[in-house]
Image 1 (cartoon, rainbow, N blue to C red):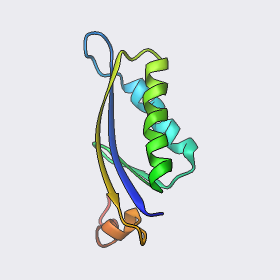
Image 2: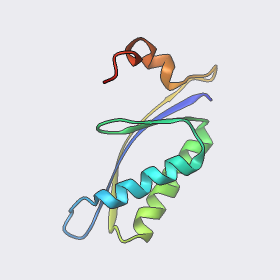
Image 3: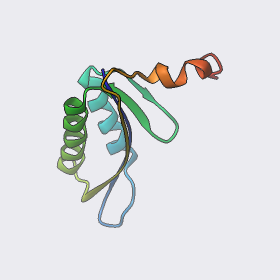
Length: 99
């Protein structure tokens, strides 16, 4: 794995109300992808290769729109390291402090 994706999806209706059930549907797609991930308080981080992660973003967008969102706003950060990167590479010294 050489890429980390930090993603926050905010599926909205015509009134720009955010749908928590659609966010949960997006997280189900992450789970179903088989890629390692960590759900955080404000976003989810996923490990993978570049192409798999871009496909995941597309699948998440298509799914929430198919389920009734009129738009989907994303906040995305990507770290690509050709020699490899994992979530724990960046968090290992803090992982023992999780509550």
